[in-house]
Image: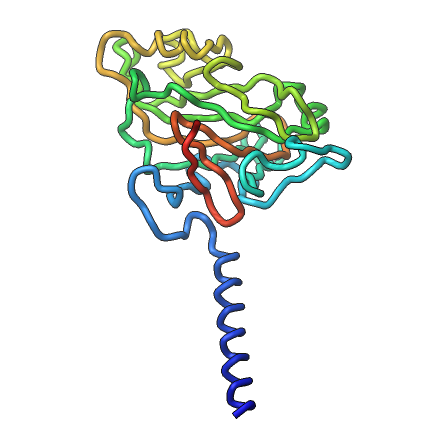
Length: 262
């Protein structure tokens, strides 16, 4: 009787271990689920990734050593999106890598402007002193929205709408929330950037960019949303708490969770 009970207990423990192991190794992009705002549609955007960078959900980072309080841990949960890009690792021109981690499903067709458009955007970042030595204080990851700009003066159905953050107020620690609507600058790629004047050479504040996109014709719409880095300087760090309007995307090793912004 005891032997039989012991056998059943060992089997049960073995099954439990296998289930726990499977839960740990299933990537975020493989989780089941769907629907508007689904956290399961997030992952590496392969067509926008160059070289072999890292854009992976992870625990931490905690620290750096000697750092205490809220700056010593991810702002939400215990994980983040770790990003690593190299500056000279491809045979392309430029030779730098590009990482793109985003969502190609849930934002498609949504407006860029108006009350239902992009009105709150930003994130928290783990910046290091080494990253600053690689490319200066503004060597930072970005937020990119692929959009249909629908500009009368630019006959194109595609442009990337990119936020360039300001320098992080802290290094070797987690920053507070960096608000993309009030800090840093934005630019559009391609002919949309030329038509609006908000291009990489002359990026614009968020309100100016939205005014430039509102040219009286068909309103611009979203394709995708992503956090990324490149192609420029080497950068190794992390991002968490990506906010898009009323939703905060909490990057965890087990997947991307959604939180309601206060």
